Image (cartoon, rainbow, N blue to C red; front, side, top):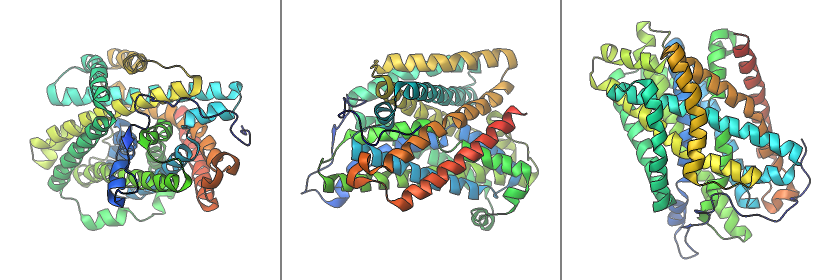
Length: 442
């Protein structure tokens, strides 16, 4: 799957053209801090994908079963994500292309078309997890039946349209506000759970037990497999280009540096949320012998009696609902970038959203009607397996493109970064293949 040495075509019309280069970053007269502030936003949209309901399920199960030990895995997977997202920003700034456009340009149709199909499947799988998570959140907070809640989630298209019409900064502000709400909810929950902070700190250190214990290794693989999301690689390489940075080399270098800082800080914020879910599960469930908590709704039911607070389940449900709403916004944009970049078809955001959401609602409805709420946990696992299968088809081209001096020019990825990301790609591929084979084998 080797691309040609240089881009075959001139840069084409950008994806998300309605917001392309619409956010000023300040000229030479602006202070460095003001220019950095103008770049804050895309990283937080990307960070949303690292705390979706699929991540909740794996973090809850890991904390309940093994306490704080798997915090190291959460940290390691977050470092992997930071480096890969930095490559996405590099590709966008250096080439003016998002990852979907780069694949269509560099590869023949017999390769780029299957890559598009895999990317679409990944977005549908992501949306499936968001449908389930949002429906569970509505059920936990308002008692709305799951089979009704999943159809209510289709109404988020009107929210997205309203935000996009007001400007891309409003989309970013909405995402950051919901992230702040999630953070506040978990801050209160962890304070009520009162974890042993010495053990929390020790959990971030590597442990041989993770490799030696097959059950722990399986959950560790699940955490890593659910962390690096394929659609985020397409998303980040597209939304970085909403900034109107200069096109000369010094301006591009500064844009890359600021965009990388934005995504790095945002992903450390995502690590805080994911670690909080694991810490809450360890402090509330593991310490009292409730080691088999993996379903989100079961965790919700146990919080009040274990923490002795009636507000705990409400905060948990609110955080889950905010997580689902956040993810629906970013999945829509990722879907636009993938479709426009790979096959140059431009659909109205609401139409694109309804099509994707329709593919997600159908299997969710079928599972709930046949198996009830118990089946939603297995459906979440299936969505993560689909994402794991697609992941190599996004990572490998990204690493190859950014390592090519012919494609990237003076902004080619340094060898140490290419080497680290190649090692990360190989590790993730091996771990995800292992996870996929384990799940398929029961």
